[in-house]
Image (tube, rainbow, N blue to C red; front, top):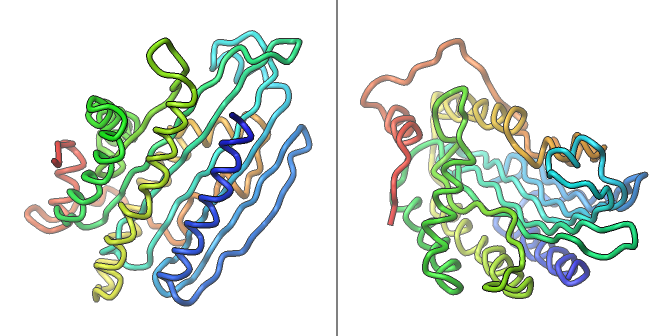
Amino acid sequence: MKDQFFQYIQDLQNKIIAKLEEVDGKAKFLRDNWEREEGGGGLSCVLTDGAVFEKAGVNISKVYGELPETMQKALNVSSGKFFACGLSLVIHPTSPHIPTTHANWRYFEMYDKEGNIVDQWFGGGQDLTPYYLDEKDVMHWHTICKKSCDAHDAAFYLKYKEECDKYFWNTHREEARGIGGLFFDYLKPTSEKTVEQWYDFVTEVGNSFLEAYIPIVEKHKNDEFSAEQKEWQEIRRGRYVEFNLIHDRGTLFGLKTNGRIESILMSLPKHVQWHYNHQPEEGSEEYKLVDVLKHPKDWI
């Protein structure tokens, strides 16, 4: 399974990069192969200063070896040998009318001293962080998320949509990072679902990403915007940074397993602002966004 899934994320990385370069029409991704001293490595691909995308990263990695004691405690395991691979992407568009997006699909194995698999699971999801609320965009995004879930289990969409709303919550701000999507973790083989069935579900979600995101980009990439709207985008990006550095499990896992810092912090935007006690004017378009982030809702 680990070889099968790693081949999948390699192919998906190439597919997503090709599409983003096509849509941008100007910039190309820098490809950076790297190795992890303790075992494994990856390929980080980053685009900057494009015509449409200010910064985008589409990274894959596979790491293995002894799991640090801090992560053994976090995962509540006694064995220290592990394998993990995944694809992680973050896209920060130039226009404040195009949402930022994040997605991640990953696979994890734990081993006993003889090298036998003692635990295995999938995780991942995809979420959307708009700066201005276009309800048709949000409904499109969630419709594609639901379609990929419904192909496997009618209960999955609501379950993993709720998990997403719960996970991407900036508790110190009492607001959501964005308008959600899907989030799932610890998808383990059981009597009801085999590891192959979980693989089929996770890859279905991965394959749906471009269908969910690219139409939104194409719709807004030529929209005009003001300096004030750009400033608002950069203020909201500050909340994105706060979540990634304070709450995100993937960031914390990478830091605690001696991950590659440049790849871990790839998710951060190029330009961001923090204003003291900034409050949008009541009734404004900016206010409408924040109101939705304070009170997550069902979109379809």
